Amino acid sequence: MRIESNLPKTPVGSTSATSVAVSRPGFSTAMSQMQSPHVKVIQAGDTLTSIVRDQAQRQGVKLSPAEEFRWTQALAADSGIQNPNAIFPGQKLQLQNMLNQWQAGQTQPNPQAANTAAQPLSHTAAQPLSTTAALSKANVINAVAHPVLSQTLDRAVARGFIPKVEKQDVYNKVLQVANKHKFSPDDFARLTLMESDGMNPQASNTRCHGIIQFCDGPDRGAAEVGFGKAPKSILGLSVYQQLHLVDTYFDKVGLKKEGAVPLDELYLAVLQPAARSEKRPEEPLGIPGKQAKYLYEGRDPQGPMTRASISQGLMQNASDRLSFKNYRSNSAGNNVANAIHNALNPATDNNPSSAARIRLQVQKAADYDAVEAPKVWLR
Image (cartoon, rainbow, N blue to C red; front, side, top):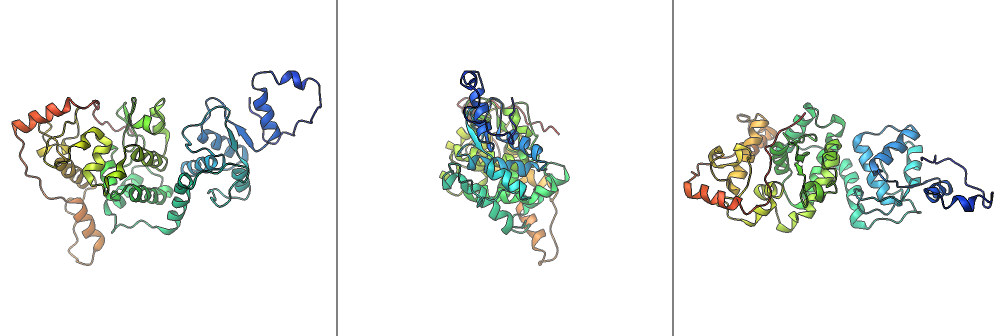
């Protein structure tokens, strides 16, 4: 049963039937909502996103998917909830701050307008919201500094993966996550070009879903970010929303503990974390299942896969998908064109495969747990 937030408070001692009604299932929840009009008690099946969306509809406020997600983060912070993906029936949400800002015409959360009735999150938990807000004001998309990311975002907008109005937010969030976990923003773009055709939030192979392919199963990607029971729900999130899951996932796999993260390490953290124990660049890795041919030495799926071949393959795949094989300006002053060329055109890998290396590849594959299905992008 829904209780409207504008219902009057129940008069104290108004009827003798109240003491009897308290014992009825759900009555205490209804009473708490009636007595605190700006408090929402979480019911089974609720999510923070569904609650924000429902409240916005009631108030006549139109929110984009990115704005909905920001409000879920703000609502969690106002309500003392540290993990917005883990809420439970009976928890109370403090709506007053959010509703007040909407009534003032604000569709972006103001982290300074804290709800004094709520238990605030720690500084660490609340930091991503304020950092993202600061980034959105300070940054513009820099095609010279991050040419692969810039071109990947342009392509994602053209293909309908990212609404044009959200491109800047996505760019800012990628930079924030990359800075936190110490990898290159361009390398993250290369990863998504391999895993999801370049930030397609609905990319799926029936077992793995989203922009970096969060996979089903215990202790796999979807479970690590709070979607173990409903992994395909990730497909309903925007790119901006999924980037928050990416941040959580990299925290769980301990990516930033490695120091500066090169392209091969970044990709292995997603493809097969167990393979990260092999640090030698030319040593065959035991990656099970059928992977993209770009990732094997000589693009031969029967050959070994190494850290070196992974880096080479990701670079070449990005070059091919972004159609910049020969993109080079004759003018020395065209920094954007030259940056794109240098970033997207790797040197040729001439390292030959051998029967011994292939046998080692097969042997190592037996040591890993997961068998990944081939990537199939759904649009």
